[in-house]
Length: 61
Image (cartoon, rainbow, N blue to C red; front, side, top):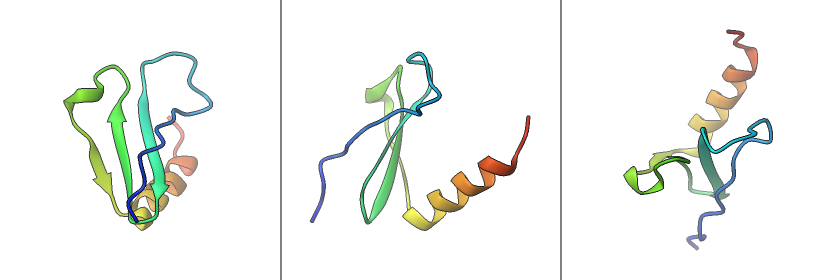
């Protein structure tokens, strides 16, 4: 069953200058630009997205 995307931003975001993520569909994770929602959407397999999230927790800039 395809879910209607439940778009959300990071709890760390205090403005609209970030990305939105919809991860409520078990078959994919979608990412889009908050400032230009109609510009397109990136789609990732859930396992790839989970790996990215875990890696991003360890990287310090």
